[in-house]
View 1 (cartoon, rainbow, N blue to C red):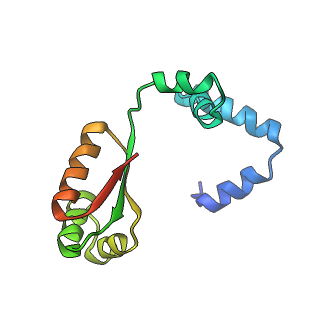
View 2: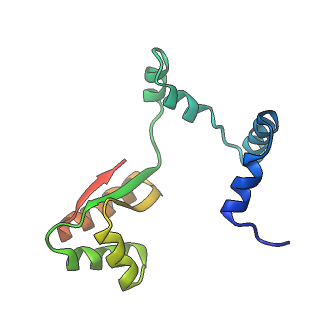
View 3: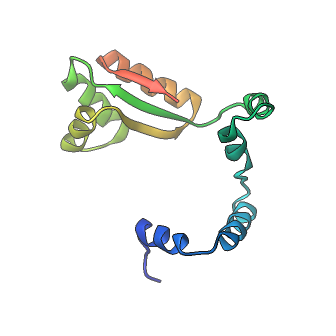
Length: 127
């Protein structure tokens, strides 16, 4: 089976009728054991929806490099250690801040990454 690119998948889905996309979402939710409903409720931000969303504890966090700081060499070293990127890729990431360093990390992992980057002189956000 030929491997599809992300663009090919997006193009295919963009041409489907909305009803077929809704059916596909339901089928994938069942197959993967997940639900898209909490995302829709949190995104709505309507009157009673906000307290319900606040009750659910967040389990995945994104670590964002907000600014490389004055000591970019140390920050680049820390980014390479965290991500296993090459020197050029890590340098480009630091110089292109704000950029995500790690997405979908646990609370402990996100805190650890934040500590390492801040110790190197970077400004970091955990979302």
